[in-house]
Length: 381
Image 1 (cartoon, rainbow, N blue to C red):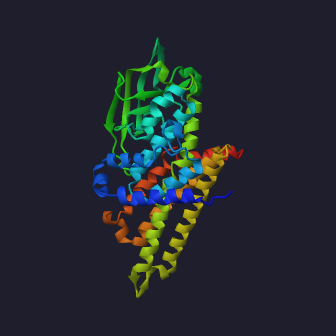
Image 2: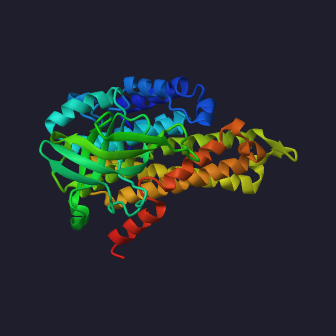
Image 3: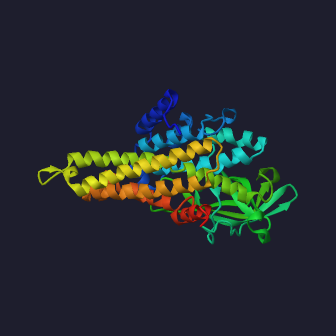
């Protein structure tokens, strides 16, 4: 495997880093405090081409391969401290754009993908329900075919981009007796009759990424908005999760790099007992551990993206990448706070926010425990 960047890739990575550092961090502390979504930053990222990175040019994207895409997103995560904004972009890409690209009809792709790429539509994915969670396929939201419409009834929760979204893939069951084989995915637009966006949900971290409940009461969805065929919801969702687990934490690798560099600088500059704190073995050990976490996370990310680009099966690698990066992100955030001591605990230094944002990565796209079960199963255990 050759992970050396071409000149064009390197230039794109550097360009997105500079763009993020200069354009996306202003006013972050106040937005995070009030849980505000950065619409201006969203639009700027779309204009840069980030939203359409993996989407073919014929549908308004950049047509980047998976390795190039995660490399760019890594540098976006390094330069942009607004982890919520970056998370919203990732949710938009991996849970809506990619399933639409791979399962959608030509008409669906041409209707929606250009507007998803240019940021005029904000997308999301509605799978989780109040009574489900890790048991994702135990859905109670139903769909019934009535002439030229499907009628959806039920509710969803923990929907990323829920309160600001314009288009969602909503999973519902046509026949609960068939279990996962009765599930379908539907493209549901904001404003469809019977579709209501519920209250915003306040979170511990990623507060600038809006989350909400969605409600469907005799919601009318045109037949042509069925994504894929009837009963293909499990394949659709599995495909979406494969992309999501392998790519959604690319920006977290950039955040780990930022935490590592910030901690090295502090350990060199901070003096205690007549010397830099980095001279103390316990502090130095934490710095070394952070570097190990960074290298592990980056290697898992690049390997999975490279294999994906080669058309290989990556179920195991995607689960390992998700597990490795999320756990290492949390550990590095904890170590960064410990190295900075009391200053790391203060909101002003913006490190405590990194830990709050990182903790969520152990939960979304399948918990760390679920990833371990997946890997163990694929190893034949």
